[in-house]
Image (cartoon, rainbow, N blue to C red):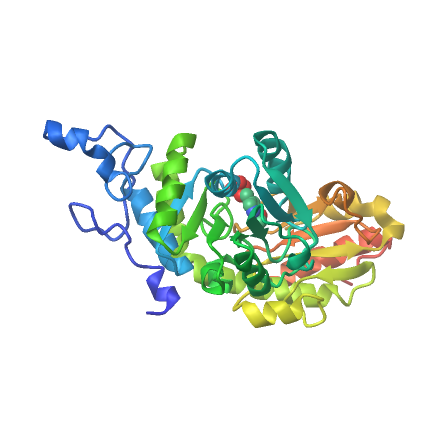
Length: 391
Ligand SMILES: *Cc1c(COP(=O)(O)O)cnc(C)c1O
């Protein structure tokens, strides 16, 4: 079955009646008919229903859908993308272990490595996204994170190469694959052990859900993640699961359209005065293009542009006066967003080479022409040009 069709399946096939979608059930107290069943309720922990925090029908349906979409055996849900990242770390690592995190990865994930894992006796080390793994892996390395492309800087990584080196050294690999979603990159089929998604982005897709997932290829890993999620007290809301299942049905069409608009805007922006560089691995001239073309089957709909440092003071005039684009931190919903970034803070302690402002552009479902006009007028304001660039 093609993915587009599979995404429309009703994943809640264990309900006592048939329905086209999965209705949310509150995480109510589950009742047992016998004392023996009550004492045995932990058996329901990995598959059935024992307690609202551990599962409810919409969560089970979403777990199945995510596992299928990732090409994995099982998936665990977490209350946010960040919570999914932490779940992997706290499942795999203990005192004395080392973890490698690319300096291009999602900022809060690097901060958590320092401020949460550090005091637990876990040594987190940053690495350049294109570093030679063999120089970094030690007998204590238990986990290597990859994220391609990187947050804001959009750097690609040789994920199969990193997986091979990490596995040779006895370390597991976790991937934050939120940018391409599993439609554009199936991390598990490239040997990654833990495939993380921020479901808050494309998969729920409407900027109204916060959730994360971890997919794995085997039952034992699923059980250890699920055990750890219980000790952390993680649960997910039935409404959020139902909204995410609804988002899944349109994921393929949304992402196709959004990614196509994003690439067309990225191509056009690369020709505009005031833009010094466009960072998008699907652009043929991008330094990460060869890796993207080799490993990915699709692109996400966010990319970054670097602006001429001479006009940096005009950045607010550009970003604050647009008709369609708004300023906001997240992405993956229906609306186009700008996120300016201070790379000297994000990449600390690494030097970020470019002097000009960096703006991440998350592209929504609006028409290409309207977004292009907005950017053309904004760039005119940025350059300090009096006349409207859109003629
Ligand atoms: C947004 C994001 C996350 C975190 O997701 P939340 O649900 O907001 O916690 C993790 N990784 C990447 C790459 C993201 O963009």
